[in-house]
Amino acid sequence: MFDPIDFLNYLINGALVGLLYALIAMGFIVIYRASKVFNFAQGELVVFGGFVVWWMVIQTGLPLVVALPLAMVMSALFGLAIERIFFSRLVGESGFAMVMVTIGLLILIRGLILVLFGPQVRPFPIIFPLKPVIIGDILIPRSLLIGAMITVVVGLGLSWFFNNTRAGLKMTAVAEDHQVALSMGISVKRSIAFAWALGAVLSTLGAIIYLSGKSLNFLASDIGLSALPVALLAGFESIAGVLLAGLIVGAVQGLVTAYVDPVIGGAVGSVFPFVIMLVILFIRPTGMFGWRTIERV
Amino acid sequence: MLELSNVEVLYSDVILAVKGITLAVPKGSCITLLGGNGAGKSTTLKSISNVLMTEDGKVTSGTISFEGARIDGGDPAKIVRNGIVHVMEGRRVLSHLTVEQNLIAGGHMEPSTQSMRRRLDGVYDRIKRLASLKSRTTGYLSGGEQQMVVIGRALMANPKLIMIDEPSLGLAPMMVDEVFGVLRSLKDDGLTLLIVEQNTRVALDLADFGYVMEDGRIVLEGNAADLRANEDIREFYLGLNLEGERKSYRSIKHYRRRKRWLG
Ligand SMILES: Nc1ncnc2c1ncn2[C@@H]1O[C@H](COP(=O)(O)OP(=O)(O)OP(=O)(O)O)[C@@H](O)[C@H]1O
Ligand SMILES: [Mg+2]
Image 1 (cartoon, rainbow over the protein chains, first blue to last red):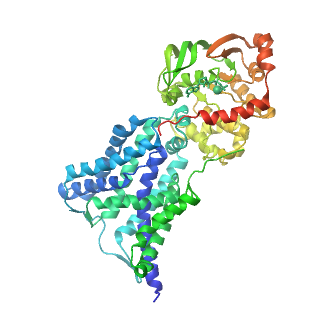
Image 2 (cartoon, each protein chain N blue to C red; image 1 turned 90 degrees about the horizontal axis):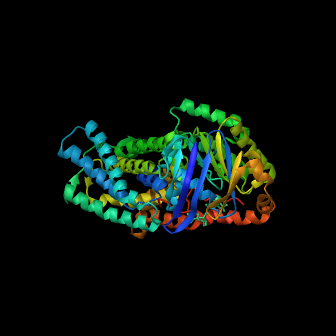
Image 3 (cartoon, chains in turn red, cyan; image 1 turned 135 degrees about the vertical axis):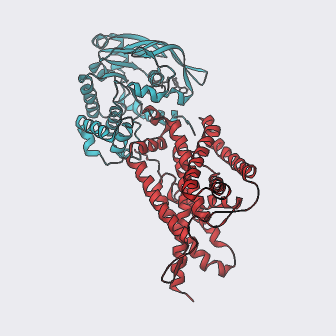
């Protein structure tokens, strides 16, 4: 029987998971905007960030207040290193070459994690208390709720930064047109490097929210894939739009998983975002808020 | 202030687009560089600002110096910081951003928000039209308005020398007058200008001195007044100004030639 409380539960939890996707998608979008690199290794950045946090907290036993900022710094450096080693050499290469490099990067990061942290499944530290938040009959995992708030704050903050500040508009100019940005005296290389650092930091933030109190292994990189439809629905340029897109994709996925999956007996819920993605690609490839080519006649 | 001496520019290691040109832009002057399609005017400006590097081009011989120091092959960001801003051909606005966002991005080198705001007010003051267009998306503005935006954006970088590539391109005569009115006000305020034009008449009206390029070389140079009186110029450039025909060709050309860079 249809129970409105259940419905609300599915809807809210779905939407919160969607906001987590949105955070991961944000990292993807930040990198895409500046460098026009479609980074297939975004999920691997999440896993790498997760392992760094695990290593700092569980292995070296640092308190969270020290370990988390330090993990952020390390991810930023990792992002910078990736840009320097792989992409700064690819100036002028085709988009296809770039995509191939990100796929290579994906494999490489997996190897790197294996070498650095070993193949075992690791327990991820409990960053947010496990006790769920209970509002009436609605049960919400605390990590998702706090994570959602962080995501909204970060999303709106970044959006404001990119649209209003001098430093942010510099990045946005790079997103629009590398040559024009250069003619304005903007260091395109530095902007791209900054974007990779920021993209890696956002991924690590995503890892903390996603993995808090769970176990950590390679499979966590699947979240990068789940974030892709959100980025696409938002359009690759809009940071604020990605919040709304995350809410939509997450809520729909939550409801489909709850109501359609049991009927069909299959995992329609997990495929659904990709169905949305294909539909968007057909009807509006630039997403809801992406930059459409402005053609004046 | 700016000197080019025997500059040669090569694209993709094979196409020699500029074949040894020498020109000087003294401080406070307004110089125009004239010539037909494919003469190498834009390439010359790109070699100065070194946005050339985004098109796989380089200066293979000769020197470019600004205020006594060599700048050829330099970092484009540093060249802007030194005081040269290149307003590229084809009104390259940041099309998804508003007028004000374009201008703020142009003022990214300002040390503080206050000083940037002051510059912004200065630009709105000089180009009144921009003040009323502040929050409009630049991609949807008219050609003339877009030309004003890119000039305003260049001013935000606090330049000593503005190089502007075909500001009259595809504009109605009244708009051309308005754009050149702004350029004249800049000249009157002592800013140094290097203007590339095919609209020879307006350019020579404003400029002190002109160079004419053909096939990568400078074929003629002289005081603006002398050039205006020159028979060849009259015949080949002033006479041969078939607006309509040129316009349609030019709008295609710009998009065809834009190169991929950094992906
Ligand atoms: N990126 C490039 N790669 C290779 N060749 C180029 C490139 N840009 C320009 N050229 C060539 O260099 C020559 C000079 O071009 P340039 O754009 O400097 O001419 P222009 O005088 O500005 O002409 P127009 O008035 O049509 O803008 C032309 O033959 C052109 O085809
Ligand atoms: Mg040109």
